[in-house]
Image 1 (cartoon, rainbow, N blue to C red):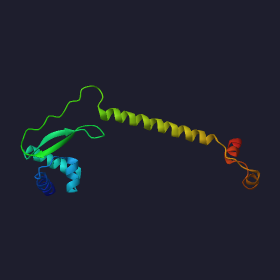
Image 2: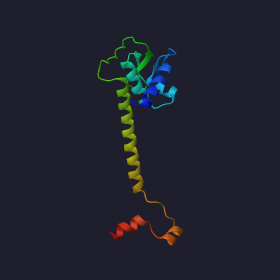
Image 3: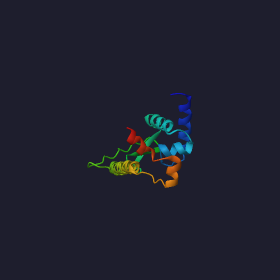
Image 4: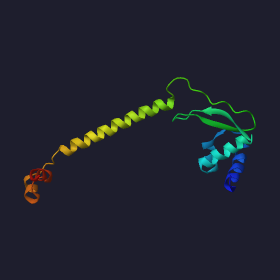
Length: 140
């Protein structure tokens, strides 16, 4: 690990010494650094027994996020979800279905719009002629 990682670890340890429990994302926001740097620093600090996982949370998008605290206690085990669907997966499937439906409706709307001929009044016909697509179809 480079010098940057040691700086991040030192700043992270100083932040964690206030006794609050934090996720890696919350620590990254407080330190104003990239999440990846905080994840790597937390992994190294866990290996060195400086911090540990005190809890697991489920964010809105699903999955599990570790909550860290200062100390060398044993890590809390990651929960195992029983059953086929988790909250995140079922939400993702609903979102995917909505996106597919919207994409199909938009494609259908564009197809119908291409079949509609714009209205040309007599004055417009006199200046510009007949509708171009109609004229192209007749020449082909």
